[in-house]
Length: 222
Image 1 (cartoon, helix red, strand yellow):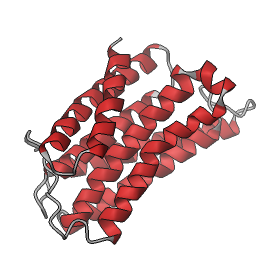
Image 2: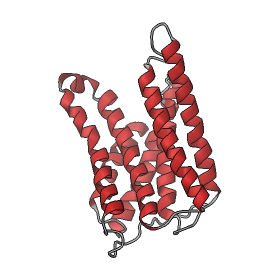
Image 3: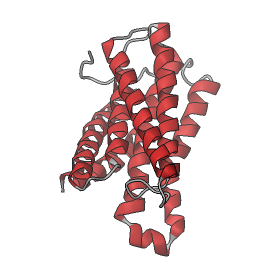
């Protein structure tokens, strides 16, 4: 029940955060609620995966990483950095290494699977984790990022975390419905579409420089 409630609130607050004007009070309120609900959903998902000995525990852990780093990116002042970014990089690197090893194990298995999954999903998650590691390295090397780059970092990580949750819900929670109506899985692409639209707006237009309010949350980050 904790997992389901957390995920359900995450869907609603994630959609609200995407809808409200970026940097506004409703956006910050929805964003904070999204953070807490997604952490609740992902932590409980990791716990349940451990109980049933399922490798999706690492997907849940990676979701925690995405949400946490997105939140810190919103909280950081322009050009600021802390020890959190270094630990986050190592965290994502560990996830990427584990997923890659699992993919190799699946590929070498006579059944073509490892923990009931083929190598493809492992390699995909490992690749995404390494992309995140690359961006973390960039932030650390620069001593922090500012402006549109910081907003984009916050944006893509929050949206991708929502995408993972949505895909998991539609692919597992509604498996029977999805088998009968495969097009329902297209709903899982909604967070990715929103992410692409906003990244284009932030990085390739003058939206940020024309007075868009900075994204901030109220709690502290260390």
